[in-house]
Image (tube, rainbow, N blue to C red; front, top):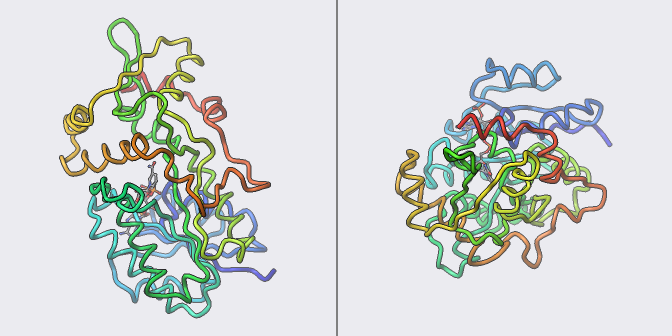
Length: 322
Ligand SMILES: NC(=O)c1ccc[n+]([C@@H]2O[C@H](COP(=O)([O-])OP(=O)(O)OC[C@H]3O[C@@H](n4cnc5c(N)ncnc54)[C@H](OP(=O)(O)O)[C@@H]3O)[C@@H](O)[C@H]2O)c1
């Protein structure tokens, strides 16, 4: 195999970082072009030290910036960050510009799009407010509808609920202790409602495998998660590990919405987030649908479990830090 140039959008972030770092372990196979708005930031410097070509780039700078970033690219890992703008419209514009540039990049052999399911399609039109899923799914549709040639070499990856969310946002993802030291979790889910979960650090392994098996994954959608688990089960495992008493409370969607608003989220974002949880309550694990490849079933790919994640991370320190 000749050395391939892989462009990683979001290379300083949770998704793109592991992709860049994984490929940088094989410099004889991969030249990694890591894109960031700020090449001087520590995460970008670290990639440069590992051998990446770090390029300054802003997704809002238009198609010419993307065409420059994609020059001679053999493959692209592309993502957009809804939370940077909290605007589905902005995310769709960024995504479509990426696609327009990818379609014009004659050297491109493989395009990987970080996505989520179309919430309206999978809920039969019931859940209309999960904007950060819808925007990504519209971009996936755009590839298929506008650029059949690009679609022919595209893999769509549906991302999981990151295990790491409990480290980055403990207030939202971990139980809170009361004065008696009992830990409480409040969600609009029955305790048996499962969601696709996984360690975002495994993105690197998965993307490498997809790149290396190439054509097997063209036009395919891959659901990336190691375990379909309920938050109640995750909470109980934390309780067991640390010998804590935990209680799981089912609250109404309205109560959940108000809780998020009290934590500073806008009503629109709180609804987006609440409906995302209701998706799994009402429609089950929507990532485990016919025609979607399940990453956890790919032979040779070992994805971290929640039990392993708990072994590796001091969750209790985060619970106390809230
Ligand atoms: N958290 C979850 O459980 C979860 C689950 C599924 C999907 N997602 C999706 O994951 C996405 C966030 O990805 P992440 O977790 O990797 O976020 P992250 O760790 O916050 O990183 C965001 C990355 O996006 C880059 N970026 C943002 N705006 C940019 C711009 N205008 N131009 C160029 N680069 C830009 C940043 O690069 P620089 O700052 O270096 O420029 C950074 O590398 C969101 O769209 C979210 O919906 C999250």
